[in-house]
Structure formats: structure tokens, C-alpha cells
Length: 240
Image 1 (tube, rainbow, N blue to C red):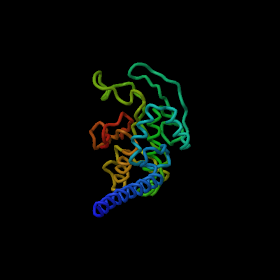
Image 2: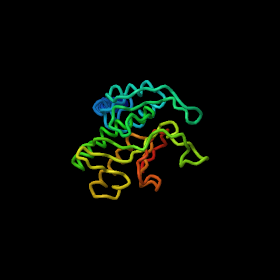
Image 3: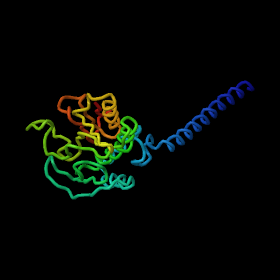
Image 4: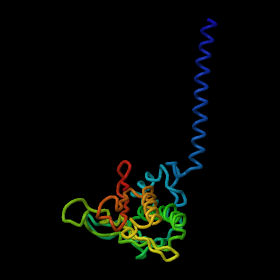
């Protein structure tokens, strides 16, 4: 009887120790997530937070919640103008967000709010740090080739519709620095070591803020620009 009682207590003690270990682990994980909100799926998305494990899921959720998305821009102090819906059919644009708070040329491009959010994250956490660390000068403006174009992928009469058809994409062509230098995808993808490093770092940095990232490494059609969009993200997304 004593042996049976001792064994029972030993089993009970092991279970209690296991529960205490699990509780301690849960508390530690909760504290770590609190200190790293970019990895915390329950923390709201903020422009100040660098892209993390949970960023893709948070941006994806904004696709169906326009008010929440624009609240992210407002909290991040990114200036924009909300425009009424336009277009019809496959090119209907229910989310027209004119972005005025970032240094883009031409200015005020119309895009979906998730694209605007991705751009703000990318500029703050990838482009500006890379420009100063690699090229020694901040970025003055970014030149783009457009956001909205009512067309199919490749411009043909058949095939899937492009994300540009609803303004859910943007094509980036060049970066103009404060010191006057212009770094373009077409001219400098194979340029000096510093130019190459900068372009590849900002390309890679975009992968944490956009569902699709295409560069000259993807195909010849992207030899002169980066294509970014917020299409419904596949597992892992596309980043090349």
C-alpha cells in the first residue's frame, strides 16, 4: 500500500511539474510576443513595426476590411485621400486610395489600401535604411510606372486579369537620392557593386510587405521595374 501511494504521488508530482513548465513557457512566449508585435498575430498592424512572421497574415486581412486598413495608414501618419469606387466588371475598383504621403513620382497614384500599406512599410524599413547604409544618402523620391491599368497579365485578350486591373499593384522603376544620384532597375541591376547590393536588398525587403514581388530575376518583362502586388497570397508568396 505504501509503495502504491508513493508511486501515485510521484506520478502526480510529475504531472504538476509538467503543468508548471507549460505555464512558465506560455508566460515567456506571451512576454516575447508582446515585445515583438511584428511576430504576434493578435497585435494590430503598425507602420512602425518592421515586417515579421505575422505581417503577411495581417496585410491579407486588410483586403476585406478597408476601414481597418485606412486606420493603419492614419496611425502611421501616412497621408492619403479616400476616393469613391470607379470602374466596372473585372476592372471595378471599390478601394481607391490616393497615396499622397510618400515621395512617389508621378505623385498621388491611386491604389488599393493594402498596396499603400505595403509601400509605407517597405519605404520605412527597407528602402530608406538600405539607401543610407549602402549608398550613403537617403532617398528623395521613388519613380513608378503606374498602379492601375485595366488589362490582363501580359496585355493580351485572354488569360488571367492583372492585379493592375484593380489598382492592386505598383511597378517601381527607379530611386532618386538626396545627393542627386538616380538608381534605376534597368540601368543599375548590373551596375556597380553598391548599386547591385542596394537594388537586391530593397527587392528582398519588399517580400515582407507584399504578396508578390517580381524583379529582373523573374523574367525579361521585368527588366526595367519591380512589380509589387497584394494578390491573395499563396503559401510562401512569390518573391523573385
